[in-house]
Image (cartoon, rainbow over all chains, first blue to last red; front, side, top):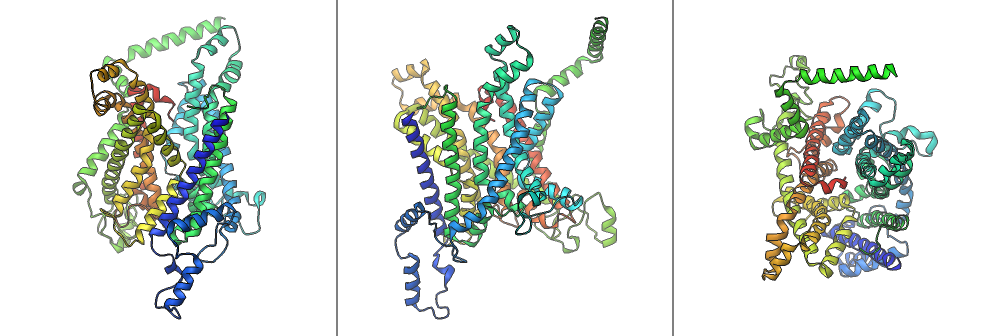
Length: 317
Length: 321
């Protein structure tokens, strides 16, 4: 077990290095970041001031050294300053992360509430109307582009019916229970499109379990249908959907970019895409680090939890 | 008790009635309809046909604009054309600069299919090779390949793709084939890791088979064993994963286009059409709805066919959501 934990942690750290190093190198491939500040030959820009500027930003050192300096500071929680407004990257991320967490958790709840009950229902009543409804929802949710369903929902509920707001998270100063209307569409969009694999996974896991010998034995010894489904079936079938649910949450935290763009949701996904368009490299590397960190940490705890909960899992493959 | 018996009897007679009502021909039709994904296969066949014969199918040039037909509605609103004195007719309407939506969809099919075919086959070749090598050799080779896959899967792909494309736009260097081939490369990079884990497991079990042992004893080289004895065994799984990945790739490509980092305009790509029409959604819904429905239909067909192939070729993959 100890060895498993260490291996898993080392792997997570490697992922973080890889993600940030790739993005760090990429963001520099676009050209000299110095040119974002100054134009050579511009007003009062002598070669000397250019050199001084370069020194101040640390751009005179080789790329690998720059990366290591950034990494060293990042470990102390300092992600540098944004190029455009010279604001602290860590501070900007802190301002935005709340919105992303709210969106992710909400969408995760929606996906779970659609996916697990419908999955169980369509497995238990295999071939019935419920099964068809469940499988249709799964097929639809898996095939529909997230941004498109977002726009369609805006068209229906915000533009045509005028029930819900189009975009954003309410006026500044308003907070959760008061501005709930702003949450409905983004959360539903993200949750619905992610419910599909959930549903399929629950359904197939449940079908496998219901087909197994111990369930047949339970039925044969006279346990009621309800007991068999909920006690014998669910408990054993839920392992893989639960794992998936953790990965889903991790994916939301690090990948709600599309939904945040469609709904103008002020989360870190939006922050990151804006930074990409502006070539604001400290912001890009900073947000990629945050994304990778959220993903790696969540999936690490998940793997550990999984191994603890289910003794059938072998720690070392 | 009596009621139950009556219900049972009437149910039985209903069944026999239905049975006798079906002729042998319809029985056969039903059988085919239930076993084969006829509609999805037809849709995909139509897509391939339209993509190959795009210039013949499309009534207009996909990139030619007509400013008098901006946001022109389609066949459902013929009066619009009378009122505005537009002579050309646009079957599915025209977009915000007056380009024919139907023609753009047709040429978009060509783009989508080319991108998918190249991205998936590249991903397939790389992924299957690594999977087979990883499973066959085991040990350190296996360890390294598997760790690379794990790390790869933890990367925030969409953001990295976005950075790559933006970097490419501001580049001082060139990429052979331009941005479209860059997108293909990115999508291939997204796909390959889907194959490795499953193929590796297959190769692991095949490696222990007796015929592989015999081949080894007979002095076959590693390369020969992998090509002649392991590869044929993993082909089914590869086809299934490839089909199931394609649907996801169409969605990813559309998402990239939507974020402004996909196939560059004015090339007609489906995701781009949705993105461009987004601002006019309140007044001209067809700009967004129609390309979206096309994406949805194609991805759904791909997923259906993928599921069907999986059930037929490789029931062990059923856990793969």
